[in-house]
Length: 366
Image (cartoon, rainbow, N blue to C red; front, side, top):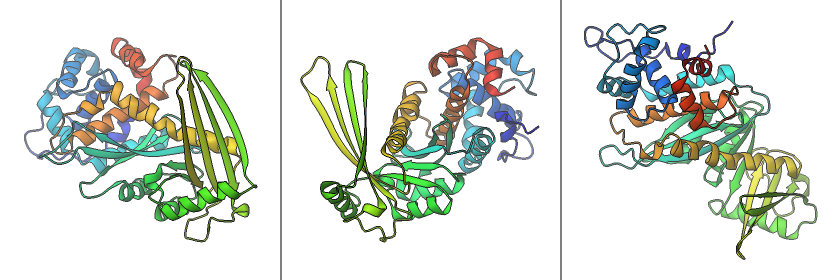
């Protein structure tokens, strides 16, 4: 039976330490302790060491630990020396072993780790792919003199997206990215804003004059407010103003979402209108569901990494430290989200894993 234990996928990492001497600890032990510590709430190298010392007897039941628990400096130095491409490849291979690939919605978005600056340069910016199954599929770093437009195709090349729907905000609304997604036999839904001015104007005109649009509306009540969303869709066969032959791969529909938010104790009403393009030929209810799933990357991934994992306060600035610690955070978040044995939030699950070794083993797939 093929293993899905997270640690088994990190055995192939190249050990960059010297072949002779200066190797008092096994690389896989260091990675394993780091992952388990972050699951249990560790946010710094010092806290990873503290966790290891507190759990040394238990860890020794399945790790070699030839010289006990490494120091925090060793955790920092060794994890920071691993090339992020290797670290992330191991993570992606594990994800591929556990995730279903049937009609998944994959949201791609960028996030800046604001505390992580190296040698006075800009903070590290990562582009991540988040599955509707609440699993992080992968991430790539946006290089200093680049942007998300070049990083997104790099990320897409590492992912198995066949049969999925890829959602990206307006920054990624690019013809080349649409073509890459379609070549990998997936569909796309892109946000549309002023960075594609001609297409935006055509889409706005289409919704202004067309009588062929279909619509769906939903209403949410809660948190002292009423939110109404109306999703209108025009299909390719009914286009009068949009020119589909302008290299937008498989362009099949355009979407308009009108949102209204009313507050219980305020007279203020917030409204917004957003436009999207898609390779899908789908009804407005399904398209609204897909777009709302993309909005979830802000709440389910970025917010969780900031609030539960304090990622925006990450001050790790040596070599690949911040980038690899971001992978550790996403591994922990994915494992915690994947666990369905406890009906509590991520912060409570982290505490439960720290208190209960049997529960931690369940999370780890033992």
